[in-house]
Length: 500
Ligand SMILES: NC(=O)c1ccc[n+]([C@@H]2O[C@H](COP(=O)([O-])OP(=O)(O)OC[C@H]3O[C@@H](n4cnc5c(N)ncnc54)[C@H](OP(=O)(O)O)[C@@H]3O)[C@@H](O)[C@H]2O)c1
Image (cartoon, rainbow, N blue to C red; front, side, top):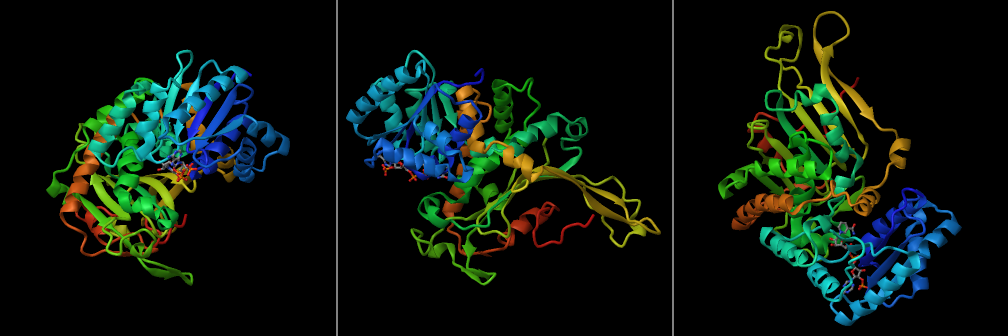
Protein backbone atom coordinates (compact mmCIF):
# COMPACT_ATOMS: atom_id res chain seq x y z
CA UNK A 1 0.00 0.00 0.00
CA UNK A 2 1.18 3.48 -0.86
CA UNK A 3 0.66 4.83 2.64
CA UNK A 4 2.32 2.00 4.47
CA UNK A 5 4.84 3.15 7.08
CA UNK A 6 7.96 1.16 7.82
CA UNK A 7 9.45 1.20 11.31
CA UNK A 8 10.46 -0.63 14.44
CA UNK A 9 8.93 0.78 17.62
CA UNK A 10 10.81 0.23 20.85
CA UNK A 11 8.52 1.07 23.74
CA UNK A 12 10.18 1.59 27.11
CA UNK A 13 7.49 0.93 29.70
CA UNK A 14 5.69 -1.59 27.45
CA UNK A 15 3.77 -3.08 30.38
CA UNK A 16 2.60 0.29 31.74
CA UNK A 17 -0.70 2.10 31.81
CA UNK A 18 0.02 4.51 28.95
CA UNK A 19 1.18 1.73 26.61
CA UNK A 20 -1.85 -0.41 27.31
CA UNK A 21 -4.52 2.28 27.35
CA UNK A 22 -3.26 4.54 24.59
CA UNK A 23 -0.35 3.27 22.51
CA UNK A 24 -1.47 -0.25 21.62
CA UNK A 25 -5.03 0.73 20.64
CA UNK A 26 -3.65 3.66 18.60
CA UNK A 27 -1.15 1.43 16.80
CA UNK A 28 -3.99 -0.98 16.08
CA UNK A 29 -6.10 1.76 14.52
CA UNK A 30 -3.16 2.63 12.28
CA UNK A 31 -2.96 -1.06 11.40
CA UNK A 32 -6.67 -1.21 10.59
CA UNK A 33 -6.27 1.80 8.31
CA UNK A 34 -3.32 0.24 6.50
CA UNK A 35 -0.65 2.71 7.70
CA UNK A 36 0.95 -0.21 9.51
CA UNK A 37 0.84 -3.44 7.60
CA UNK A 38 3.63 -5.92 6.96
CA UNK A 39 6.70 -3.83 7.59
CA UNK A 40 6.49 -2.92 11.22
CA UNK A 41 7.36 -4.51 14.54
CA UNK A 42 7.09 -3.44 18.17
CA UNK A 43 9.43 -4.33 21.00
CA UNK A 44 7.88 -3.75 24.40
CA UNK A 45 10.28 -3.59 27.32
CA UNK A 46 9.82 -3.50 31.10
CA UNK A 47 11.33 -5.42 34.00
CA UNK A 48 8.64 -7.98 34.62
CA UNK A 49 9.46 -11.36 33.09
CA UNK A 50 6.73 -11.82 30.50
CA UNK A 51 6.81 -14.27 27.58
CA UNK A 52 5.95 -13.16 24.05
CA UNK A 53 2.80 -15.24 24.29
CA UNK A 54 1.70 -13.50 27.45
CA UNK A 55 2.52 -10.12 25.89
CA UNK A 56 0.35 -10.96 22.88
CA UNK A 57 -2.58 -11.56 25.20
CA UNK A 58 -1.95 -8.19 26.87
CA UNK A 59 -1.95 -6.52 23.46
CA UNK A 60 -5.22 -8.19 22.48
CA UNK A 61 -6.79 -7.27 25.83
CA UNK A 62 -5.82 -3.65 25.29
CA UNK A 63 -7.85 -3.66 22.06
CA UNK A 64 -11.07 -4.89 23.68
CA UNK A 65 -12.87 -1.53 23.43
CA UNK A 66 -12.26 -1.47 19.68
CA UNK A 67 -14.05 -4.82 19.34
CA UNK A 68 -11.61 -6.11 16.74
CA UNK A 69 -11.98 -9.09 14.49
CA UNK A 70 -10.13 -11.99 16.20
CA UNK A 71 -7.94 -12.94 13.27
CA UNK A 72 -6.96 -9.31 12.68
CA UNK A 73 -6.09 -8.78 16.36
CA UNK A 74 -3.95 -11.94 16.34
CA UNK A 75 -2.16 -10.93 13.14
CA UNK A 76 -1.49 -7.50 14.66
CA UNK A 77 -0.24 -8.91 17.99
CA UNK A 78 2.15 -11.21 16.10
CA UNK A 79 4.23 -8.12 15.28
CA UNK A 80 4.89 -7.55 19.01
CA UNK A 81 7.94 -8.81 20.94
CA UNK A 82 8.51 -8.55 24.65
CA UNK A 83 11.91 -8.12 26.19
CA UNK A 84 12.44 -8.13 29.93
CA UNK A 85 14.77 -5.23 30.41
CA UNK A 86 15.92 -3.05 33.26
CA UNK A 87 16.76 0.30 31.73
CA UNK A 88 19.60 0.82 34.19
CA UNK A 89 21.34 -2.42 33.15
CA UNK A 90 23.78 -1.94 30.25
CA UNK A 91 23.83 -5.64 29.33
CA UNK A 92 20.13 -5.59 28.61
CA UNK A 93 20.71 -3.07 25.82
CA UNK A 94 23.00 -5.55 24.08
CA UNK A 95 20.14 -8.06 23.98
CA UNK A 96 17.85 -5.27 22.78
CA UNK A 97 20.27 -4.30 20.01
CA UNK A 98 20.40 -7.91 18.73
CA UNK A 99 16.64 -8.27 18.85
CA UNK A 100 16.18 -4.96 17.01
CA UNK A 101 18.65 -6.03 14.30
CA UNK A 102 16.87 -9.37 13.88
CA UNK A 103 13.46 -7.71 13.55
CA UNK A 104 14.88 -5.16 11.18
CA UNK A 105 15.85 -7.98 8.85
CA UNK A 106 12.76 -10.07 9.35
CA UNK A 107 10.33 -7.22 8.58
CA UNK A 108 12.62 -5.24 6.23
CA UNK A 109 12.45 -2.10 8.31
CA UNK A 110 15.32 -0.22 6.62
CA UNK A 111 16.79 0.74 10.01
CA UNK A 112 13.82 3.05 10.78
CA UNK A 113 13.31 3.27 14.52
CA UNK A 114 10.95 5.05 16.89
CA UNK A 115 11.87 4.97 20.56
CA UNK A 116 8.93 5.68 22.85
CA UNK A 117 9.59 6.75 26.45
CA UNK A 118 6.43 5.48 28.15
CA UNK A 119 7.88 5.45 31.62
CA UNK A 120 9.00 7.66 34.44
CA UNK A 121 10.96 10.70 33.21
CA UNK A 122 13.75 10.03 35.69
CA UNK A 123 14.86 7.23 33.34
CA UNK A 124 14.79 9.22 30.08
CA UNK A 125 18.41 10.31 30.37
CA UNK A 126 19.78 6.85 31.14
CA UNK A 127 17.81 5.24 28.30
CA UNK A 128 18.82 7.81 25.72
CA UNK A 129 22.50 7.55 26.75
CA UNK A 130 22.41 3.78 26.30
CA UNK A 131 20.66 3.97 22.94
CA UNK A 132 23.73 5.76 21.70
CA UNK A 133 26.53 4.02 23.64
CA UNK A 134 25.18 0.53 22.88
CA UNK A 135 24.68 1.46 19.23
CA UNK A 136 20.98 0.83 19.07
CA UNK A 137 20.62 3.99 17.00
CA UNK A 138 20.93 3.07 13.33
CA UNK A 139 22.84 4.76 10.55
CA UNK A 140 20.61 3.42 7.82
CA UNK A 141 17.12 4.75 8.58
CA UNK A 142 15.53 7.35 10.83
CA UNK A 143 15.87 7.48 14.60
CA UNK A 144 13.04 9.35 16.34
CA UNK A 145 12.51 9.77 20.03
CA UNK A 146 9.02 10.27 21.43
CA UNK A 147 9.01 11.69 24.91
CA UNK A 148 6.09 11.92 27.30
CA UNK A 149 5.31 14.68 29.72
CA UNK A 150 6.35 15.80 32.26
CA UNK A 151 9.39 17.27 30.56
CA UNK A 152 11.15 18.53 33.65
CA UNK A 153 9.84 19.96 36.89
CA UNK A 154 11.00 23.52 36.28
CA UNK A 155 13.15 25.36 33.75
CA UNK A 156 16.44 24.12 35.22
CA UNK A 157 15.49 20.43 35.33
CA UNK A 158 13.93 20.65 31.86
CA UNK A 159 17.14 22.19 30.55
CA UNK A 160 19.24 19.44 32.11
CA UNK A 161 16.95 16.75 30.68
CA UNK A 162 17.10 18.40 27.30
CA UNK A 163 20.91 18.53 27.35
CA UNK A 164 21.03 14.83 28.23
CA UNK A 165 18.74 13.94 25.36
CA UNK A 166 20.55 16.18 22.92
CA UNK A 167 23.77 14.19 23.42
CA UNK A 168 22.11 11.38 21.44
CA UNK A 169 19.33 13.04 19.41
CA UNK A 170 19.18 16.26 17.46
CA UNK A 171 16.21 18.61 17.98
CA UNK A 172 14.56 17.45 14.75
CA UNK A 173 14.66 13.83 15.95
CA UNK A 174 12.85 14.64 19.21
CA UNK A 175 9.05 14.48 19.39
CA UNK A 176 7.87 15.87 22.71
CA UNK A 177 4.28 14.80 23.20
CA UNK A 178 1.62 17.20 24.33
CA UNK A 179 -1.41 15.10 23.59
CA UNK A 180 -3.65 18.19 23.53
CA UNK A 181 -1.95 19.06 20.27
CA UNK A 182 -3.32 15.81 18.85
CA UNK A 183 -6.94 16.72 19.59
CA UNK A 184 -9.19 17.48 16.66
CA UNK A 185 -10.49 20.83 17.87
CA UNK A 186 -7.10 22.07 19.06
CA UNK A 187 -5.87 21.45 15.53
CA UNK A 188 -9.01 23.16 14.32
CA UNK A 189 -8.03 26.44 16.02
CA UNK A 190 -5.80 27.19 13.04
CA UNK A 191 -8.54 26.28 10.56
CA UNK A 192 -11.07 28.53 12.29
CA UNK A 193 -8.61 31.41 12.47
CA UNK A 194 -6.82 31.25 9.17
CA UNK A 195 -9.62 29.81 7.04
CA UNK A 196 -12.20 32.48 7.84
CA UNK A 197 -11.71 36.08 6.91
CA UNK A 198 -14.55 37.27 9.14
CA UNK A 199 -12.75 35.77 12.10
CA UNK A 200 -9.11 36.50 11.35
CA UNK A 201 -9.81 40.12 10.52
CA UNK A 202 -11.28 40.62 14.01
CA UNK A 203 -8.54 38.62 15.73
CA UNK A 204 -6.77 41.40 17.59
CA UNK A 205 -6.96 43.89 20.44
CA UNK A 206 -9.20 46.26 18.54
CA UNK A 207 -12.09 43.81 18.63
CA UNK A 208 -11.28 41.23 21.27
CA UNK A 209 -11.78 42.10 24.93
CA UNK A 210 -10.39 38.94 26.51
CA UNK A 211 -9.79 35.27 25.80
CA UNK A 212 -10.69 32.50 28.24
CA UNK A 213 -9.26 29.00 28.22
CA UNK A 214 -10.88 26.45 30.52
CA UNK A 215 -9.70 22.87 31.07
CA UNK A 216 -11.97 21.63 33.82
CA UNK A 217 -12.08 18.09 35.10
CA UNK A 218 -14.81 16.61 37.23
CA UNK A 219 -12.69 13.79 38.63
CA UNK A 220 -10.24 14.15 41.50
CA UNK A 221 -6.65 12.96 41.41
CA UNK A 222 -7.72 9.31 41.73
CA UNK A 223 -4.80 6.89 41.30
CA UNK A 224 -2.41 9.61 40.11
CA UNK A 225 -2.23 11.22 43.56
CA UNK A 226 1.43 10.26 44.12
CA UNK A 227 2.56 12.02 40.93
CA UNK A 228 0.11 14.88 41.30
CA UNK A 229 1.26 15.72 44.81
CA UNK A 230 4.71 16.55 43.40
CA UNK A 231 3.35 18.42 40.37
CA UNK A 232 0.11 20.34 40.95
CA UNK A 233 -2.19 21.89 38.37
CA UNK A 234 0.35 24.51 37.27
CA UNK A 235 2.92 21.96 36.13
CA UNK A 236 0.39 19.32 35.11
CA UNK A 237 -1.79 21.52 32.90
CA UNK A 238 -0.84 25.19 32.60
CA UNK A 239 2.85 24.98 31.68
CA UNK A 240 2.08 22.57 28.83
CA UNK A 241 -1.49 22.09 27.53
CA UNK A 242 -2.93 25.51 28.37
CA UNK A 243 0.19 27.35 27.22
CA UNK A 244 0.09 25.45 23.93
CA UNK A 245 -3.56 26.35 23.34
CA UNK A 246 -2.83 30.00 24.18
CA UNK A 247 0.09 29.96 21.75
CA UNK A 248 -2.06 28.62 18.89
CA UNK A 249 -4.64 31.32 19.61
CA UNK A 250 -2.06 34.11 19.79
CA UNK A 251 0.44 33.30 17.03
CA UNK A 252 0.63 35.23 13.77
CA UNK A 253 -0.53 33.50 10.58
CA UNK A 254 2.31 31.25 9.41
CA UNK A 255 3.66 31.64 5.87
CA UNK A 256 2.56 28.07 5.15
CA UNK A 257 1.17 25.22 7.18
CA UNK A 258 4.55 23.48 7.37
CA UNK A 259 5.94 22.33 10.71
CA UNK A 260 8.80 24.79 10.44
CA UNK A 261 6.66 27.83 9.65
CA UNK A 262 4.19 27.06 12.43
CA UNK A 263 6.98 26.49 14.94
CA UNK A 264 8.60 29.75 14.02
CA UNK A 265 5.36 31.61 14.70
CA UNK A 266 4.75 29.77 17.96
CA UNK A 267 8.23 30.51 19.20
CA UNK A 268 7.95 34.12 18.10
CA UNK A 269 4.71 34.77 19.95
CA UNK A 270 5.98 33.00 23.06
CA UNK A 271 8.86 35.44 23.12
CA UNK A 272 6.25 38.14 23.68
CA UNK A 273 4.65 36.24 26.58
CA UNK A 274 4.92 38.47 29.62
CA UNK A 275 6.93 36.81 32.38
CA UNK A 276 5.48 38.08 35.63
CA UNK A 277 7.54 39.42 38.48
CA UNK A 278 6.95 37.60 41.75
CA UNK A 279 4.63 40.40 42.89
CA UNK A 280 2.69 40.31 39.60
CA UNK A 281 2.40 36.52 39.83
CA UNK A 282 0.81 36.81 43.26
CA UNK A 283 -1.78 39.17 41.81
CA UNK A 284 -2.30 37.48 38.46
CA UNK A 285 -2.58 33.86 39.59
CA UNK A 286 -4.96 32.15 41.97
CA UNK A 287 -4.52 28.65 43.35
CA UNK A 288 -7.03 26.30 44.87
CA UNK A 289 -7.37 22.88 46.43
CA UNK A 290 -10.58 20.88 46.51
CA UNK A 291 -12.44 20.04 49.66
CA UNK A 292 -15.03 17.42 50.48
CA UNK A 293 -18.63 17.44 49.28
CA UNK A 294 -21.57 15.11 48.90
CA UNK A 295 -22.82 15.05 45.32
CA UNK A 296 -25.79 12.90 44.27
CA UNK A 297 -25.46 10.97 47.53
CA UNK A 298 -21.80 10.26 46.82
CA UNK A 299 -19.31 11.30 49.47
CA UNK A 300 -16.25 12.97 47.89
CA UNK A 301 -13.24 13.45 50.13
CA UNK A 302 -10.71 16.26 50.50
CA UNK A 303 -7.66 16.24 48.25
CA UNK A 304 -5.63 16.03 51.46
CA UNK A 305 -7.34 12.73 52.36
CA UNK A 306 -6.12 10.98 49.19
CA UNK A 307 -3.47 8.25 49.43
CA UNK A 308 0.10 9.52 49.07
CA UNK A 309 -0.98 13.10 49.75
CA UNK A 310 0.31 15.00 52.81
CA UNK A 311 -2.41 15.90 55.30
CA UNK A 312 -1.18 19.52 55.16
CA UNK A 313 -0.46 19.43 51.41
CA UNK A 314 0.16 22.74 49.72
CA UNK A 315 -0.33 21.30 46.22
CA UNK A 316 -2.83 23.17 44.07
CA UNK A 317 -5.58 21.22 42.30
CA UNK A 318 -6.85 24.42 40.68
CA UNK A 319 -5.23 27.36 38.94
CA UNK A 320 -6.72 30.47 37.39
CA UNK A 321 -4.61 33.22 36.04
CA UNK A 322 -3.91 35.87 33.49
CA UNK A 323 -1.44 35.49 30.62
CA UNK A 324 -0.46 38.45 28.46
CA UNK A 325 1.28 38.65 25.12
CA UNK A 326 3.11 41.93 24.74
CA UNK A 327 2.93 42.62 21.04
CA UNK A 328 0.99 44.77 18.57
CA UNK A 329 -1.83 42.27 18.15
CA UNK A 330 -2.49 41.43 21.79
CA UNK A 331 -1.39 44.35 23.90
CA UNK A 332 -4.11 44.94 26.52
CA UNK A 333 -5.96 41.65 25.92
CA UNK A 334 -5.82 39.30 28.91
CA UNK A 335 -5.80 35.56 28.26
CA UNK A 336 -7.58 34.18 31.31
CA UNK A 337 -6.80 30.55 31.92
CA UNK A 338 -8.36 28.12 34.33
CA UNK A 339 -7.94 24.44 35.12
CA UNK A 340 -8.80 22.25 38.02
CA UNK A 341 -9.92 18.93 39.35
CA UNK A 342 -13.29 18.09 40.92
CA UNK A 343 -14.94 20.98 39.14
CA UNK A 344 -18.62 21.14 38.24
CA UNK A 345 -18.21 19.74 34.73
CA UNK A 346 -15.57 18.11 32.55
CA UNK A 347 -14.94 20.48 29.67
CA UNK A 348 -12.17 21.92 27.56
CA UNK A 349 -13.14 25.08 25.72
CA UNK A 350 -11.96 28.47 24.58
CA UNK A 351 -14.21 31.53 24.84
CA UNK A 352 -13.20 34.56 22.83
CA UNK A 353 -15.04 37.57 24.21
CA UNK A 354 -15.41 40.49 21.80
CA UNK A 355 -15.58 44.14 22.74
CA UNK A 356 -18.93 45.83 22.96
CA UNK A 357 -20.38 47.94 20.18
CA UNK A 358 -19.45 51.60 20.75
CA UNK A 359 -22.97 52.60 21.77
CA UNK A 360 -25.94 50.55 22.97
CA UNK A 361 -28.84 52.15 21.08
CA UNK A 362 -31.35 49.56 22.39
CA UNK A 363 -30.82 50.54 26.01
CA UNK A 364 -34.16 52.22 26.50
CA UNK A 365 -36.09 49.35 24.95
CA UNK A 366 -34.47 46.61 26.99
CA UNK A 367 -34.91 45.58 30.65
CA UNK A 368 -31.23 44.97 30.61
CA UNK A 369 -28.84 47.91 30.36
CA UNK A 370 -26.04 45.84 28.92
CA UNK A 371 -25.84 44.14 25.57
CA UNK A 372 -24.29 40.70 25.96
CA UNK A 373 -20.82 40.60 24.38
CA UNK A 374 -20.31 38.54 21.26
CA UNK A 375 -18.49 35.34 22.19
CA UNK A 376 -16.86 32.83 19.86
CA UNK A 377 -16.57 29.53 21.69
CA UNK A 378 -14.37 26.68 20.52
CA UNK A 379 -15.55 23.44 22.13
CA UNK A 380 -12.67 21.00 22.43
CA UNK A 381 -14.04 18.39 24.83
CA UNK A 382 -16.31 16.51 25.45
CA UNK A 383 -18.24 17.78 22.41
CA UNK A 384 -16.34 19.26 19.49
CA UNK A 385 -17.40 22.29 17.52
CA UNK A 386 -17.76 26.01 17.79
CA UNK A 387 -20.44 28.56 18.49
CA UNK A 388 -21.07 32.25 18.23
CA UNK A 389 -23.14 34.24 20.68
CA UNK A 390 -24.80 37.18 19.01
CA UNK A 391 -27.53 39.63 19.94
CA UNK A 392 -30.86 39.56 18.16
CA UNK A 393 -34.19 41.28 18.57
CA UNK A 394 -36.59 39.60 20.89
CA UNK A 395 -39.70 38.48 19.00
CA UNK A 396 -42.66 40.77 19.62
CA UNK A 397 -43.33 44.41 20.19
CA UNK A 398 -40.53 46.84 20.92
CA UNK A 399 -36.82 46.56 20.42
CA UNK A 400 -35.53 44.54 23.33
CA UNK A 401 -32.55 42.40 22.41
CA UNK A 402 -31.43 39.08 23.69
CA UNK A 403 -28.40 36.88 23.08
CA UNK A 404 -28.77 33.85 20.81
CA UNK A 405 -26.28 31.06 20.24
CA UNK A 406 -25.32 29.93 16.75
CA UNK A 407 -23.95 26.53 17.49
CA UNK A 408 -22.13 23.95 15.43
CA UNK A 409 -21.18 20.59 16.98
CA UNK A 410 -19.67 17.70 15.14
CA UNK A 411 -21.97 14.70 15.17
CA UNK A 412 -21.18 11.80 17.47
CA UNK A 413 -20.65 9.65 14.36
CA UNK A 414 -18.09 12.04 12.88
CA UNK A 415 -16.14 12.30 16.14
CA UNK A 416 -16.24 8.53 16.67
CA UNK A 417 -14.42 8.13 13.36
CA UNK A 418 -11.96 10.90 14.12
CA UNK A 419 -8.52 9.61 15.07
CA UNK A 420 -7.67 9.58 18.74
CA UNK A 421 -4.93 12.08 19.77
CA UNK A 422 -2.28 9.40 20.21
CA UNK A 423 -3.15 7.78 16.90
CA UNK A 424 -2.71 11.10 15.12
CA UNK A 425 0.56 11.86 16.87
CA UNK A 426 2.03 8.41 16.26
CA UNK A 427 1.27 8.75 12.56
CA UNK A 428 2.81 12.23 12.55
CA UNK A 429 5.98 10.82 14.11
CA UNK A 430 6.06 8.03 11.51
CA UNK A 431 5.76 10.70 8.82
CA UNK A 432 8.49 12.82 10.41
CA UNK A 433 5.99 15.65 10.87
CA UNK A 434 6.72 17.57 14.06
CA UNK A 435 3.99 20.24 13.70
CA UNK A 436 2.02 18.94 16.66
CA UNK A 437 4.91 18.33 19.00
CA UNK A 438 6.61 20.80 21.32
CA UNK A 439 9.93 22.40 20.40
CA UNK A 440 12.50 22.98 23.14
CA UNK A 441 12.31 26.77 22.68
CA UNK A 442 8.57 26.66 23.40
CA UNK A 443 9.09 24.55 26.49
CA UNK A 444 11.90 26.71 27.77
CA UNK A 445 9.75 29.81 27.60
CA UNK A 446 6.66 28.26 29.20
CA UNK A 447 8.82 26.91 32.03
CA UNK A 448 10.29 30.37 32.61
CA UNK A 449 6.73 31.65 32.80
CA UNK A 450 5.53 28.91 35.18
CA UNK A 451 8.61 29.06 37.40
CA UNK A 452 7.87 32.58 38.62
CA UNK A 453 4.37 31.60 39.68
CA UNK A 454 5.71 28.55 41.50
CA UNK A 455 8.29 30.75 43.21
CA UNK A 456 5.64 33.26 44.27
CA UNK A 457 3.55 30.46 45.76
CA UNK A 458 6.53 28.85 47.46
CA UNK A 459 7.08 32.11 49.36
CA UNK A 460 3.71 31.83 51.04
CA UNK A 461 2.06 28.49 51.79
CA UNK A 462 -1.66 28.63 50.98
CA UNK A 463 -3.32 29.41 54.29
CA UNK A 464 -6.87 28.72 53.12
CA UNK A 465 -6.60 25.22 51.55
CA UNK A 466 -8.97 23.53 50.89
CA UNK A 467 -10.63 26.61 49.44
CA UNK A 468 -13.25 25.24 47.05
CA UNK A 469 -15.79 22.50 47.40
CA UNK A 470 -15.82 19.58 45.01
CA UNK A 471 -18.39 20.15 42.29
CA UNK A 472 -17.97 23.94 42.17
CA UNK A 473 -15.98 25.96 39.61
CA UNK A 474 -13.10 26.72 41.97
CA UNK A 475 -12.40 29.36 44.61
CA UNK A 476 -14.14 32.73 44.60
CA UNK A 477 -10.81 34.42 44.02
CA UNK A 478 -10.92 33.06 40.44
CA UNK A 479 -14.04 35.15 39.77
CA UNK A 480 -12.55 38.18 41.49
CA UNK A 481 -9.48 37.89 39.28
CA UNK A 482 -11.62 38.56 36.20
CA UNK A 483 -13.83 41.10 37.92
CA UNK A 484 -10.75 43.26 38.49
CA UNK A 485 -10.49 43.58 34.70
CA UNK A 486 -14.24 44.08 34.29
CA UNK A 487 -14.70 40.55 32.92
CA UNK A 488 -16.43 37.35 34.01
CA UNK A 489 -16.10 33.71 33.10
CA UNK A 490 -18.31 32.86 30.14
CA UNK A 491 -18.40 29.18 31.01
CA UNK A 492 -20.32 28.68 34.21
CA UNK A 493 -22.26 25.42 34.48
CA UNK A 494 -24.34 26.91 37.32
CA UNK A 495 -25.69 29.64 35.03
CA UNK A 496 -28.70 28.63 32.93
CA UNK A 497 -27.97 28.04 29.24
CA UNK A 498 -29.31 30.56 26.79
CA UNK A 499 -32.44 29.23 25.15
CA UNK A 500 -32.56 29.80 21.44
N1 LIG B 1 -0.89 6.90 31.86
C1 LIG B 1 -1.25 7.98 31.22
O1 LIG B 1 -2.39 8.16 30.80
C2 LIG B 1 -0.24 9.07 30.92
C3 LIG B 1 -0.70 10.27 30.35
C4 LIG B 1 0.23 11.26 30.04
C5 LIG B 1 1.56 11.04 30.31
N2 LIG B 1 1.98 9.88 30.89
C6 LIG B 1 3.40 9.71 31.10
O2 LIG B 1 3.81 8.50 30.49
C7 LIG B 1 4.84 7.88 31.21
C8 LIG B 1 4.42 6.48 31.62
O3 LIG B 1 3.25 6.54 32.43
P1 LIG B 1 2.42 5.26 32.86
O4 LIG B 1 1.17 5.77 33.48
O5 LIG B 1 2.31 4.30 31.74
O6 LIG B 1 3.36 4.64 34.01
P2 LIG B 1 3.32 3.17 34.62
O7 LIG B 1 2.00 2.50 34.40
O8 LIG B 1 3.84 3.27 36.01
O9 LIG B 1 4.38 2.39 33.75
C9 LIG B 1 5.76 2.44 33.98
C10 LIG B 1 6.45 1.41 33.12
O10 LIG B 1 7.85 1.49 33.34
C11 LIG B 1 8.36 0.18 33.60
N3 LIG B 1 9.57 0.32 34.43
C12 LIG B 1 9.67 0.91 35.65
N4 LIG B 1 10.96 0.87 36.08
C13 LIG B 1 11.67 0.26 35.11
C14 LIG B 1 13.05 -0.06 34.95
N5 LIG B 1 13.97 0.23 35.88
N6 LIG B 1 13.42 -0.67 33.81
C15 LIG B 1 12.53 -0.97 32.85
N7 LIG B 1 11.22 -0.69 32.94
C16 LIG B 1 10.79 -0.09 34.06
C17 LIG B 1 7.21 -0.53 34.28
O11 LIG B 1 7.25 -1.93 34.17
P3 LIG B 1 8.02 -2.88 35.24
O12 LIG B 1 7.51 -2.50 36.57
O13 LIG B 1 7.66 -4.26 34.81
O14 LIG B 1 9.46 -2.60 35.05
C18 LIG B 1 6.03 -0.01 33.43
O15 LIG B 1 5.96 -0.72 32.21
C19 LIG B 1 5.12 8.83 32.38
O16 LIG B 1 6.10 9.74 31.98
C20 LIG B 1 3.80 9.56 32.55
O17 LIG B 1 3.96 10.82 33.17
C21 LIG B 1 1.10 8.90 31.19
